Length: 337
Image (cartoon, rainbow, N blue to C red):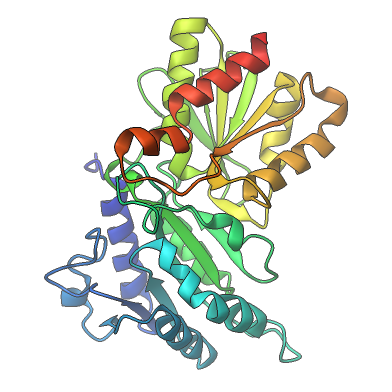
């Protein structure tokens, strides 16, 4: 049996596999070379194994992403590590106005295999400029795909598929998730099982065997562990059975694997770390509400971060971001309110 891997280790192995499989692939970023190996050690060992393909760069996010786009136009491929996902805003023009538009604006389809890896999210005490979840700013851009790492989806398969699609993509990686264990053998924990359903990359469905759920929770990978803790709490303290759906691709949105279970439950809670307004969660809630209108017992509810910067103080940070307690409270209100 293969040794268990943490999410960061799984991502490191996926990057190594991608670099070994394709000599045209480059990994670019600030401080990613050994012995440092990146701010979160995801690239540790890769520059030693692949010195030609793993390149350290100056501190210029716009320059790095522009270089990646140029490599893609020349027939190569590029993965960029943005040290903190917050700094992807400095490369927004290169992502939205160059990489994404280059796919279609030349009169024929042009492959643009560029992946931005963005460590994201709070619950680490890093403060307002290093803790944001900026997924919503990249949702809805034509030819730009948005993904989020999860502990339920095979990381090597996910990265291989993103590169094979030939479109620029942003891969959000929750920083707290890095130290979490990859799930395997269908076990989410000692109570709940999971499987991955739907077309690639699919949606991970976490549930209590075949027990019918009273509510479906839809959450991205970075929120998945908090949602799972809420599921345990709801089951053990309130005898409420819930089911969690975790997509790996956030945009384009594919909710077909969610519809059947959500329709049977009649209650849906969507959770995200973004602040309200034009978010991935709002798009999911709107789509589900429209598709399931005749089967819903309650309106689809959206739980998001407070309208605030993310504080550095741990108790204030927890109050701003959705936690297992607030997720459980929202479900209880939907079921018994």
